[in-house]
Amino acid sequence: MDPVRDTAPDSWEQEDDGEAPVDVRLPDAFTGLNVNAKPFVPNVNAAEFVPVYLQTGPAESVAVADSEKDSGVELSEPVAAPPVENGDAALAADDTWEQKGCEVSEAEPGGGPAGDGGLAEEDSPQEEGTEEDEEVPIPKMVPAKPDAPKKEHVNVVFIGHVDAGKSTIGGQIMYLTGMVEKRTLEKYEREAKEKNRETWYLSWALDTNQEERDKGKTVEVGRAYFETEKKHFTILDAPGHKSFVPNMIGGASQADLAVLVISARKGEFETGFEKGGQTREHAMLAKTAGVKHLIVLVNKMDDPTVNWSLERYEECKEKLVPFLKKVGFNPRKDIHFMPCSGLTGANLKEPVEHCTWYTGLPFIPHLDSLPNFTRSSDGPVRLPIVDKYKDMGTVILGKLESGSISKAQQLVVMPNRHTVEVLSLLSDDVETDDAAPGENLKLRLKGIEEEEILPGFILCTPENLCHSGRTFDAQIVIIEHKSIICPGYNAVLHIHACIEEVQITALICLVDKKTGEKSKTRPRFVKQDQVCIARLRTAGTICLETFKDFPQMGRFTLRDEGKTIAIGKVLKLVAEKD
Image (tube, rainbow, N blue to C red; front, side):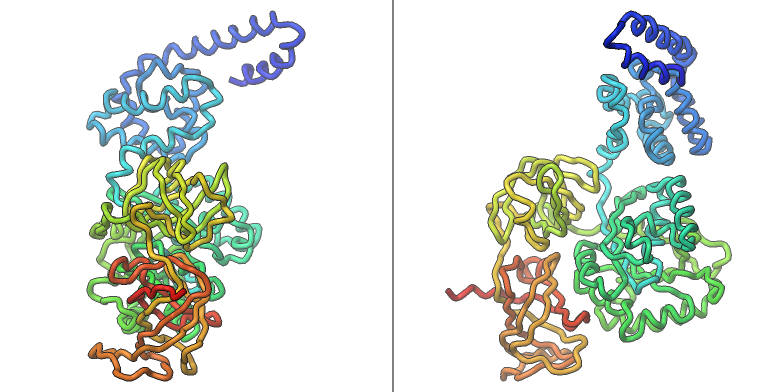
């Protein structure tokens, strides 16, 4: 292969002065290649080929790929799948090979040419044209298309106190499911070692920017995805630090399932759980954000102070259950505890030998076995915008809460009532033509500038616009506030992906926690642990729905001075008096 590469640049330079040498040289090189290609033709019967490379390690299979590449096989000759992925093997993770192998063998038990043929034909037009096209990793996405609608999308948010190991577990899961290459991780490990932070390398798969890596703290919500046999998961890696709780709320508002990571290490669990710790606050915020199912991962079980001890695990469990119950999770149905170690990957995919007392499924199989979520695809289109940026047009990110969106559809951005058109749809970085509820989407929009969009705006269909306004009545539970709260109190309102300043303009009545009875007289103030119905007015117009009509857009939290003060639900929207 090398001589060809050497001659290619020379021939370009010579093109101006003399073309004869070019013509002579290139055919030589090509005939040289084609002679090598001859022996490869019998392998069209790739029936044996698939199992063979499935048995070999990923490294060997790449070597096989490279040898094919060197032999310069024309794609039109063999119909077998492996050569199709030629450009891919050099670029993508070694594991994608194995995954493809599996997909092929599922398609036809023999893994015969028929099963592969479909894939090969799909990809070949892109790659036959020019060799440069091979650099575009399109084929990598192609196999996902037929599976995309079948697999259910589940969004998992990792929450917990700072340094509990959320990003590390996320990185480990991506490695175990083959979404991050071993090579990339080895590179991270080297870089982390140079900074004397060798235990942080896994979290770098999710903490991508320099500031997060230097400090070892997640700031923004990291995103990644992985697939299991039945489901397609999006990891939302929320920051644990108390300064970044607003970011964490944005992440939790997109999740269907929360994983509360707590550290079993002596002292760390306690700090996370005490009054100012984030374990409590995050669990509460996740509940308010509408997360129904909570998995509690007791991390760092491999730590010398813990050493997979059942006593410590039970101790963490005993302290957490009463609190989670108070927040509103049902310990029997909604919560599942499991021990693990993010750094070693123990009990994430495979069970642990030296942890005999835990008999349940490891983490990833457990996620796979969870029951499906019910989502209405025939409901009105609602997509809260979480983030936006410019990239050949305006791109927005968000999770489709209900309804379905297709390419070239006309939508309206509320509350500004901009009519936009969907130019392209990406679901977890894979292009699709339509999207179902529960998917994390990137939409490229036409007809609106990036500056005109703010996080918290909602995409709807023109026929069924979502409600927007400034004044609403809501039922609020005061969770933590030192003094009393009177009308005129200002706080920050977090509702779905929207953050807005809000004032409590009037307290309407108190609600008895046990009986649910409403007081006859208007209270003059409310204090901690009381439930009241109040009228709130935001500084600007926001999109919201009543909790009864659309729970995802009717729940909110109130925060002030960096603490979560109250959680609540919207009961009634009040029309503006002009």
